[in-house]
Length: 136
Image 1 (tube, rainbow, N blue to C red):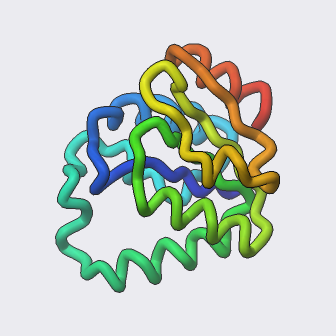
Image 2 (tube, rainbow, N blue to C red; image 1 turned 180 degrees about the vertical axis):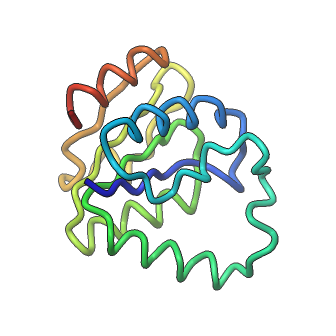
Protein backbone atom coordinates (compact mmCIF):
# COMPACT_ATOMS: atom_id res chain seq x y z
CA UNK A 1 0.00 0.00 0.00
CA UNK A 2 1.23 3.53 -0.78
CA UNK A 3 0.97 5.86 2.22
CA UNK A 4 0.98 9.66 2.12
CA UNK A 5 2.24 10.67 5.56
CA UNK A 6 1.14 14.19 6.48
CA UNK A 7 2.54 16.21 9.38
CA UNK A 8 3.74 19.70 10.18
CA UNK A 9 6.72 21.21 8.40
CA UNK A 10 6.38 25.00 8.25
CA UNK A 11 3.98 24.92 11.21
CA UNK A 12 6.81 23.64 13.43
CA UNK A 13 9.23 20.72 13.63
CA UNK A 14 9.10 19.91 17.36
CA UNK A 15 7.73 16.41 16.61
CA UNK A 16 10.14 15.47 13.79
CA UNK A 17 11.54 12.50 15.75
CA UNK A 18 8.00 11.25 16.38
CA UNK A 19 7.21 11.56 12.66
CA UNK A 20 10.35 9.58 11.85
CA UNK A 21 9.38 6.78 14.26
CA UNK A 22 5.91 6.54 12.67
CA UNK A 23 7.33 6.60 9.15
CA UNK A 24 9.95 3.97 10.01
CA UNK A 25 7.21 1.69 11.31
CA UNK A 26 4.99 2.23 8.25
CA UNK A 27 7.93 1.54 5.92
CA UNK A 28 8.27 -1.99 7.35
CA UNK A 29 4.92 -2.87 5.76
CA UNK A 30 4.14 -0.19 3.16
CA UNK A 31 5.62 2.37 0.79
CA UNK A 32 5.72 5.86 2.30
CA UNK A 33 5.65 8.49 -0.43
CA UNK A 34 6.52 11.37 1.92
CA UNK A 35 9.24 9.89 4.09
CA UNK A 36 11.13 13.22 4.04
CA UNK A 37 8.61 14.50 6.63
CA UNK A 38 10.54 12.66 9.35
CA UNK A 39 13.97 13.92 8.30
CA UNK A 40 15.51 15.64 11.34
CA UNK A 41 17.45 17.97 9.02
CA UNK A 42 14.23 19.32 7.51
CA UNK A 43 13.52 22.63 9.22
CA UNK A 44 10.38 24.76 9.41
CA UNK A 45 11.72 26.56 6.33
CA UNK A 46 10.76 23.44 4.37
CA UNK A 47 12.45 22.22 1.23
CA UNK A 48 14.02 25.51 0.22
CA UNK A 49 15.61 24.04 -2.91
CA UNK A 50 12.10 23.78 -4.41
CA UNK A 51 9.57 26.48 -5.17
CA UNK A 52 6.30 26.46 -3.29
CA UNK A 53 4.53 25.65 -6.59
CA UNK A 54 6.83 22.66 -7.19
CA UNK A 55 6.18 21.38 -3.66
CA UNK A 56 2.42 21.79 -4.06
CA UNK A 57 2.36 20.06 -7.47
CA UNK A 58 4.54 17.17 -6.27
CA UNK A 59 2.46 16.69 -3.13
CA UNK A 60 -0.81 16.70 -5.08
CA UNK A 61 0.64 14.05 -7.40
CA UNK A 62 1.62 11.98 -4.35
CA UNK A 63 -1.85 12.44 -2.83
CA UNK A 64 -3.42 11.20 -6.06
CA UNK A 65 -1.08 8.18 -6.08
CA UNK A 66 -1.65 7.27 -2.42
CA UNK A 67 -3.90 4.46 -1.24
CA UNK A 68 -4.14 6.00 2.25
CA UNK A 69 -3.27 9.22 4.05
CA UNK A 70 -1.86 8.95 7.56
CA UNK A 71 -1.79 12.33 9.30
CA UNK A 72 -0.26 13.30 12.62
CA UNK A 73 -2.24 16.43 13.50
CA UNK A 74 -1.10 17.40 16.99
CA UNK A 75 0.89 20.40 15.75
CA UNK A 76 -1.56 22.62 13.84
CA UNK A 77 -0.60 22.97 10.18
CA UNK A 78 -2.39 24.72 7.32
CA UNK A 79 -0.71 22.35 4.87
CA UNK A 80 -1.94 19.24 6.66
CA UNK A 81 -5.46 20.67 6.77
CA UNK A 82 -5.27 21.28 3.01
CA UNK A 83 -3.97 17.75 2.41
CA UNK A 84 -6.78 16.24 4.48
CA UNK A 85 -9.42 18.24 2.59
CA UNK A 86 -7.86 17.18 -0.70
CA UNK A 87 -7.86 13.53 0.39
CA UNK A 88 -11.55 13.86 1.24
CA UNK A 89 -12.22 15.46 -2.15
CA UNK A 90 -10.58 12.58 -4.05
CA UNK A 91 -11.99 9.98 -1.63
CA UNK A 92 -8.65 8.67 -0.34
CA UNK A 93 -9.01 6.93 3.03
CA UNK A 94 -7.52 8.84 5.97
CA UNK A 95 -6.18 7.79 9.36
CA UNK A 96 -5.53 10.60 11.83
CA UNK A 97 -3.31 10.39 14.91
CA UNK A 98 -3.63 13.16 17.50
CA UNK A 99 -2.39 13.82 21.04
CA UNK A 100 -5.41 15.48 22.69
CA UNK A 101 -3.49 16.19 25.89
CA UNK A 102 -1.15 18.49 23.88
CA UNK A 103 -3.63 20.29 21.63
CA UNK A 104 -7.29 20.13 20.60
CA UNK A 105 -8.04 18.74 17.16
CA UNK A 106 -9.57 21.29 14.82
CA UNK A 107 -13.37 21.20 14.72
CA UNK A 108 -13.13 21.32 10.92
CA UNK A 109 -11.35 17.95 11.02
CA UNK A 110 -13.09 16.39 14.02
CA UNK A 111 -16.51 17.49 12.76
CA UNK A 112 -16.11 16.04 9.27
CA UNK A 113 -17.88 12.71 8.96
CA UNK A 114 -15.49 11.54 6.24
CA UNK A 115 -12.72 11.38 8.85
CA UNK A 116 -13.98 8.35 10.74
CA UNK A 117 -10.55 7.00 11.74
CA UNK A 118 -9.35 9.57 14.27
CA UNK A 119 -7.25 8.08 17.04
CA UNK A 120 -6.09 9.84 20.18
CA UNK A 121 -2.82 8.63 21.67
CA UNK A 122 -0.36 9.66 24.36
CA UNK A 123 2.93 7.90 23.66
CA UNK A 124 4.87 6.85 20.59
CA UNK A 125 4.21 3.24 21.59
CA UNK A 126 0.46 3.97 21.57
CA UNK A 127 0.68 5.48 18.08
CA UNK A 128 2.72 2.57 16.77
CA UNK A 129 0.19 0.10 18.17
CA UNK A 130 -2.61 1.97 16.37
CA UNK A 131 -0.72 1.89 13.07
CA UNK A 132 0.08 -1.80 13.42
CA UNK A 133 -3.54 -2.61 14.25
CA UNK A 134 -5.14 -0.41 11.57
CA UNK A 135 -2.53 -0.84 8.78
CA UNK A 136 -1.07 -4.32 9.14
